[in-house]
Amino acid sequence: MSTDFLNIERQIVTLQGALHTLNDSYDDDIDFGMFRSACLSTAEMIFENCISLIHESLHHTTSGPKLNANAEVSELLNNAVMQNLISDDACKRWLLYYNIRYMSELNETSEVDEETLDLLPEFVADALQLVQTIKL
Image (tube, rainbow, N blue to C red):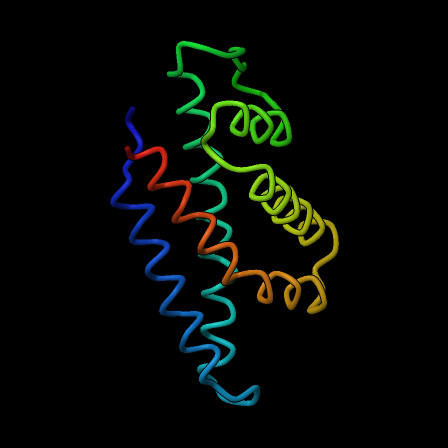
C-alpha cells in the first residue's frame, strides 16, 4: 500500500492537541476560534484520508468483493466491516461522521459544527483504531 500511515497518525495527534487546547479555551478567546477551525479542518482531512485508507486496503484484499474507484462511502464501510477492518458499531459511527460532514457541506451552521466537535473524541479513537488495524 502507498498510504502514508505516519502522515495520518500525525494528523490525528494534531487533532488531539487542537481539541485539548480548544477544550481549555474560553468561547470569547482568540485561541478558541483558531483551534475550533483547526479541529474542524483537521477532522475533515483525517476523514478523507481514512476513507482512502479503507478503499486502498479493500482494493488489496484477496477475498471479498472488489470495489470500483467511485464506490459509495456506505459501501466502503460495509465492506470494511466484512473484512474486519472496523466493527459494526464503528461502521455506524463512521456513517454518522460522513452524514454530519455531508450536512456541513450543505448547511454551514454552527449547530453542525458543534455536533462535529462533540463527536471528535470518538472520531479520534475510531481513526486511531482503523489506522492500527490496517497498519498490521
